[in-house]
Image (cartoon, rainbow, N blue to C red; front, top):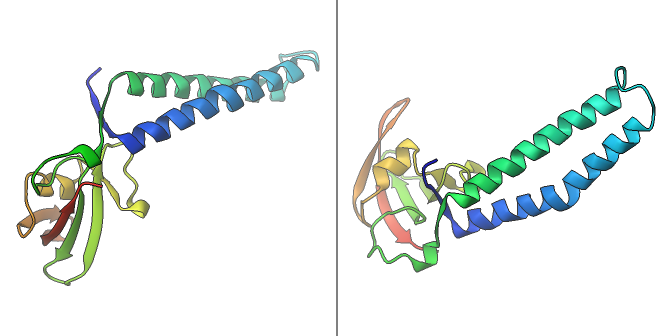
Length: 158
């Protein structure tokens, strides 16, 4: 598997989820399976089937997270010295040249992307257009509605 680039915050979120799955969800589902088994015939026991399905999901997610953490390349944005260039982990304030609306985004890994929290994937069209540019540069982004132009107002590593 190839390296997965992730911020330090994203790594912490994955570790928290893994801890919750192992210490809370896994024991709960094991108890639910034991309870369902105590009811007798397993061939017609919907509770047992549901608990086994949930166990499969939990074990799969644990394996997925452990694999991602094992292959993670963790980047701490506070330790980046990119001299004002837009790179992975950077927080970028943009101005849409058509509407003059401003927006701020942090460029993160695919697993961390969350537009509600202004975190965009490194592989998104806007992030790809921004990478390597500096404050004052204009980035052209191919959007479904056509080409949009954004001026980079500020680049921060926070």
